Image 1 (tube, rainbow, N blue to C red):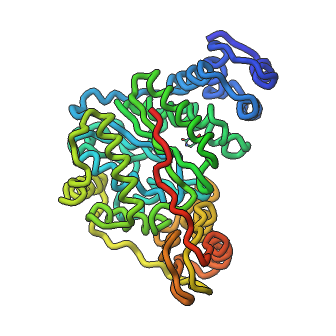
Image 2 (cartoon, protein in one colour):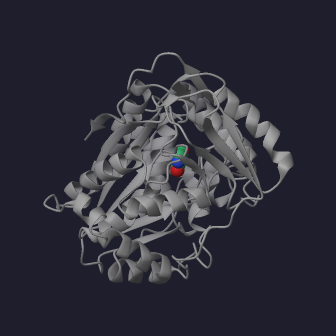
Amino acid sequence: MSGFAAVDVIRAKRDGGVLSDAQIDWVVDAYTRGAVADEQMSALAMAILLNGMTGPEIARWTAAMIASGERLDLSSVARPTVDKHSTGGVGDKITLPLTPLVAACGAAVPQLSGRGLGHTGGTLDKLESIPGWRAALSNEEFTAQLRDIGAVICAAGSGLAPADRKLYALRDVTGTVEAIPLIASSIMSKKIAEGTGALVLDVKVGFGAFMKSVDDARELARTMVELGGAHGVKTVALLTDMSTPLGRAIGNGVEVTESVEVLAGGGPADVVELTLALAREMLDAAGLSAADPAAALRDGRAMDVWRSMIRAQGGDPDAPMPEANEVEVVRADSDGYVATVDAYAIGVAAWRLGAGRARKEDPVSVPAGVLLHKRPGDPVRAGESLYELRADRAELLPAALAEAARAVTVDVRPPDPRPLVLDRVE
Ligand code: URA
């Protein structure tokens, strides 16, 4: 690949120019190999955040990130493959019930997931609450489980889009996560390299999400849907509300427990609604629109796949979740209706309780987290419990209490109801 000077590529984007295909291929490859330094890529990422990228630049950048590593071949899987990706939210445990549910309806779901950082939780951290469960699978184990059970949730191997792995860690510490071209190429390079045939995106909007406005979320969704189509992956996006946490449980073990309730035919209404909405989109995208996911939840087929999927990765689906040492219940001061439960502040509270990590290498607590006893719109009487905080150690409670107190407000009038699914992009 012909060489450029990194500083010329940075200057071109700094001055609002359009990068050539050759410049993009070179800079992504050279950064992955270590020939472009972190400080140079940081400057380029900031120039992209400030000046944006054209559609063709984003497409080329994504292709270069895919080409930085391996591309999985799922052609030995007989069923149609379809995956889901969420841009990240608070209490977002949907992957847990959704993956076995869609598999129970006839598709194969290859879910390569990540760990949490900051206020949003990670699917792998949640599943690791289950004793014995193993996140790391070889490519052969991954494909075999997909063939046999139709459902796998595991860690993305280091061979998949290594350029993204390096760049995402850099963006995280340089204030450049929020650039739409960089988010879209980061997510789509991993999903395309994973080899899925179809993809449904859950683009979160609101206090607890990267995208605070519906317009920004729609632009991100459109960019990703186009990228998927250009690479032969049928891609559809739902824009969904993340102003309030999903469900009642925010943490690791508590979110597994709530997911199992959904698989048993119960669980909070919003978690069930979003799980079914995404399942229908996935089944449509996979050409299985006649399947009935609500029936598969009701009759236990989804639960059967969950149990097989957990066992196949060494986990015990019947193991009880450990109890927290410290539990603090917070009660309402007055009668009224719950007006807000701010997803961001609740995410930070759960993180401070030990459910999340500040640095990549930090451990996370299994029982720590927040349990909401009331959700927006629920009536409440003075003295009734609003939520509880759970932690391993008492000294973690005060900082989390301060965040949660900011998050939950009670008013004399009920808030206007807000739809969960805000828009659809295909
Ligand atoms: N998730 C990703 O994988 N990449 C981003 O850039 C943002 C969210």
